[in-house]
Length: 202
Image (cartoon, rainbow, N blue to C red; front, top):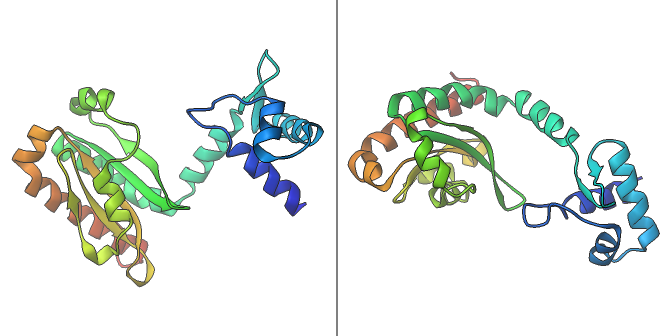
């Protein structure tokens, strides 16, 4: 059972923006398994909705993953505590706010609150979180906030001083140059309050 689950996980991780579709032979070659085994895994994952089969007998990620993702986010206390703070920051500063974590050495953006006035910036921005956000997530919470030319990020503290997550405000370079201190101070305060609520002190 564990072996099958491990292989299923490996199959799902083959799909990405760069490779949205995979075929049986391709999966077999990449994972070094017989085509019959690859076909069986793909068919099973499609049967439970984690993959979907295309008209060309290839496979894409299934829509069920979206439902599972939403269930995970909705039941995550971090997001429950952080979302109100994100909405307040977006309203106060008129900029977009991101919540991200570091998992398996990857930065994962859990949520983004977009302000209407920041939509033009977001439409041309990279989909991956800003570099300031990465820096904060890879440092102890006590290291504090980090700013670059288009964002400022601050840590949400977890147990034993570790950084559990981070919030970032993204803005234009002009806006950052003009309001960096105010953005940083507001963000740091919001992260401190979220940290306290997660620790049961808020």
